[in-house]
Length: 192
Image 1 (tube, rainbow, N blue to C red):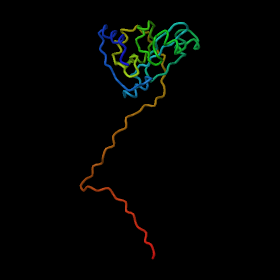
Image 2 (cartoon, helix red, strand yellow):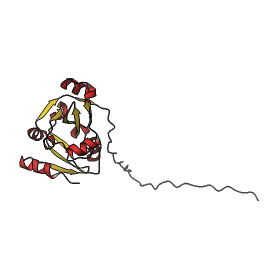
Image 3 (cartoon, rainbow, N blue to C red):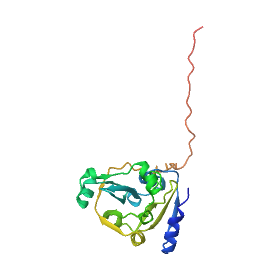
Image 4 (cartoon, helix red, strand yellow):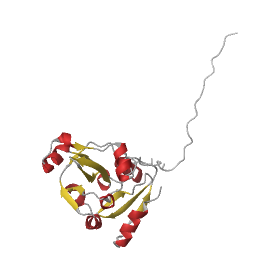
């Protein structure tokens, strides 16, 4: 599934340069970071949340977890009033499958909350609404399009980051070249 045409139109109408990043099929922002071999903090994790009766797009780095207590404090609600909508609501209200929400909340007609730590990056990699493509844009451009409320609500999570395995260097021998040792099998002498 390619990048949503509404997103490309929004970016082009606002004269924003973007880079499309194709990758294997992924369902989470963290998996996208591992596939694209970038640090998870560079990937935007996007969630649609319901706080009391209103929906919000939540954006934070893939290296963070959502701290519900900070959101509850900001909106002066109990943590039980903050919910992730059911699959049925996502399909009916937003016309999306779970995990396929793109980051342009203005297209969903909902406000955006973005974690302060994510806004310190120069560029970010965002979900395009596709499980196989993301896009990279400057954070200042994203903040220009989306009217975001910025505050700290992410908490660092322990990550198991795949590191590329270094290639083994072959040792160079000085002087003579040696053939690998052959195993010598000794035959047992049998008595006659």
